[in-house]
Image (cartoon, rainbow, N blue to C red; front, side, top):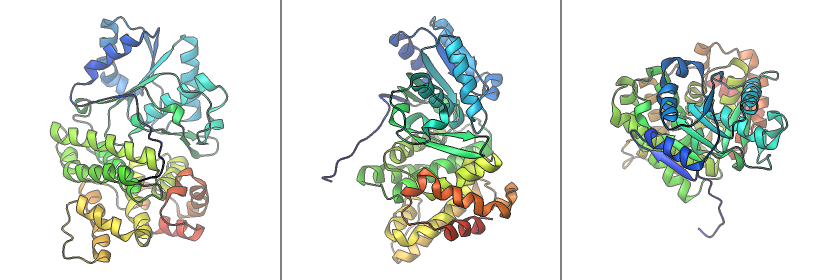
Length: 384
């Protein structure tokens, strides 16, 4: 407890039903000239963006919309968004969506104040100046990009997901309104929910974990275990959606301040190579990576089992750790996650290439157990 820590959190977070209504006044009070709204075409066509921008119009806040963000945002998405930001003389960014618009908006904000190419910022704290002031409205309970110092951009030329960990990308206002998550498709709810579970579990077992991050991670695991299956099967259940909104928000605070692990490193390669949904990749890989990790911290896996509702009172340490993996697999199956990478069209011939790139991923350093090339290949094989 005597060690020094830096805790990065947004200056303001709005969490709970209908908090989006408070955002317009917050933006107005800050006196910005013009807002760049960063989102994706689907959300724009569904009217979710208009639900926010109509209120901005009523509040006499000028804005322009960039809705070209792809599910795995690319360098071109960032470049195109920056061009709109510059041409329209914007001075504030509002992101609306899941992790993709959030990450793209962060990247645009970093380039607007630091210049260069987004590829220049891959790694840890590579920028010199804070990004453009940004508000992030999260519409899925998963990535927690709205609260973290992380963002991920796909280099489409190299087919690599670049991970940026940068204190300068932290948003000014984070918004988690579960009413915006009501009736989202079951598959999306499952994928993003398992992404949040992966964040919490990796944060709990990572090398950088400490008591504060541990408590947050375990609480997030508990909330997800209580609410994800209900949110998937009953998309209109506001209580389940609210629990998931809080869970992903809390998990994000945890991993943003202590790190992740090899699940994310391996999943990033699947996203970069095959453009697959990040949450699904995490969900498939999670039990296999943690099976590899158990020996590094078996007692922690017992705590994970407890948080997931397993009675471990009569179990040995090893039995309780195994019970955690069983609980993860059971939840994944219950919410409809595919059983393996083969179902996603992944080719075994790509395992070695992806394993090499995964070992170089910034998240690998946080894994509780050292990963060798043969280990990485073996994890992909076990997940197939």
